[in-house]
Length: 317
Image 1 (cartoon, rainbow, N blue to C red):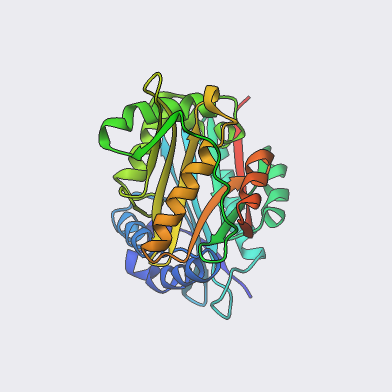
Image 2: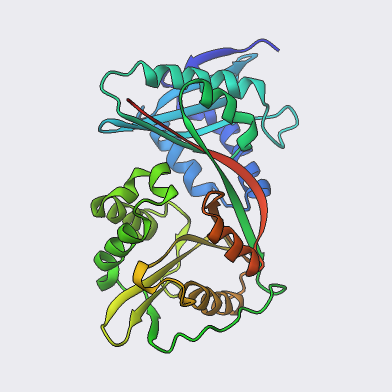
């Protein structure tokens, strides 16, 4: 079917209402995520013309869109979604047309140093060829989840030298430093350059706690591990709720000098027990395939992959 690609700033936010409703349903059914608050934020940004991007128009109806925004000399592709004819998924070819327009626009932007994008509505295999054609590095990522009632018991490692405590506001700065040092030279720092500085990891932490970028922050379930002999912050585990039945791990980090002692497993075991008591049915997370050790750990803990998608990065030579 013929379609037209139009700058999204030519439309009002209400023109996207039905598409955002379809996308929210797809997030709920395919990604196990309540997208309501994100949909409202996108609608507000569209109304205020704060997003750049393109809409796919067929028979005078918006059937898809992709938007991006700038942070200094970096651009982030925030979304790519095309409603399938039956309203239950995403069409393939029109999405490629949309993302091609976005990539070409960003490549033509003067002074742009870096482009990042993670697009969970499409598999890695669907989008990797077009991003590779435009010089992007591509990384396969996965959504994983573990049912809390049927999960295998988490073996209790010996962590007597550590105290597991609630993550309180006084820990925020130390958590940011811990995440930075734990993720230096890590594949996730290649995908997201916020991991490349303490200022960047501070923004990550702030996004989790205050801006609900990864769901509703669960302060009472998020943990830090303190090394008793030195009182150093040794590890952290952030937890959010992405829908009433699903908890989510947006960030976990163990200090390099404390790795290999079972801290991550111990924190998840304690947190999962508390989430189950609170009525949550499952916990989800995302992980990059190149982080093979983490993937293997999560699989040992009972996590299973229910969705794969791509992360794409371009840097100017």
